[in-house]
Length: 373
Image (cartoon, rainbow, N blue to C red; front, side, top):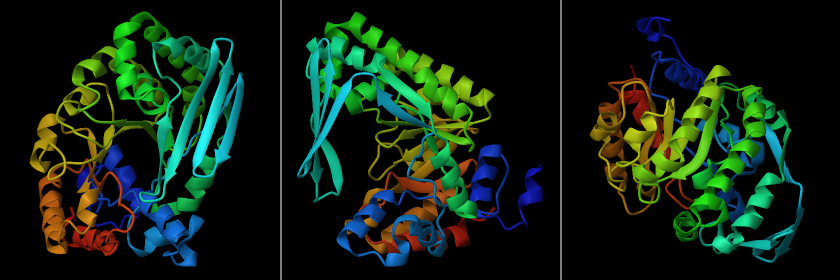
């Protein structure tokens, strides 16, 4: 479709998002913010009107003129071929895996101050636990389930578009889910061969998840890697993740899926490397003043074709920034990035609980005034 043929048409949020990924020009910059953390906390606090509970979140997005795309959904269910026991102990969630190499245990604790769960103990404590971890990974079983994807496609309607999740890529899974940063780095140094075997096992196991995702409806797929250049250096990514990204992106492109990764930390080191993998977009971008890249630098570190999704630091919804500062920042960001329509205005990376929620609507007003093509 010629770019100028879309200029005078009214687009729904879903149509705006699709236009951006097709390389077309929507009527205005899409405004898609991650409200999932704020929404769940507001329900827990009893501060959310009943009509906006649960699936009412779509009506909330509609009323504040913001597109919806989260929480992530998947086209599969994961189970294990080994014995798994999960026990809730008050604010603690304890999960143990029984393997012939011994038992591995992880513990998460709910933090009411931040409305989040955090690991207090991870499965892998040292390189000694790696054989048992590989056994657990080899026992993973993915079973197809497109119901959630289909449900969210219908639920969101023209207000948005769900994003499907694939498993975290191997290095990120070690960092985030299995071992933490310090233990993973030590294991890479102390047991490189065993770590390579674990990464290979993940790749083999994940083949089923990717195949099920390629067959599911919906065009957007995300690697939920929570990348930051402070942890995943360009060198680490090149050595352990680049080829994996490249291969999986090719598989998803054959199935006509657009591929995103979630990079919600520092950007300068990784952005130029991520572009070369073939990704269609990077989501969760957190630039200056809380990140390490100015908005006017983003395109110089990427290219004209990749979709830049994010931009408003989550901290700017809080009391540390005046509303006038927020307004000026969004206007400047829109002015800077709008020159290239491969751009989705979002939050880096979430609107926090107890923040000034009126700023979400203010961003929509600013898009109306300063974000039209």
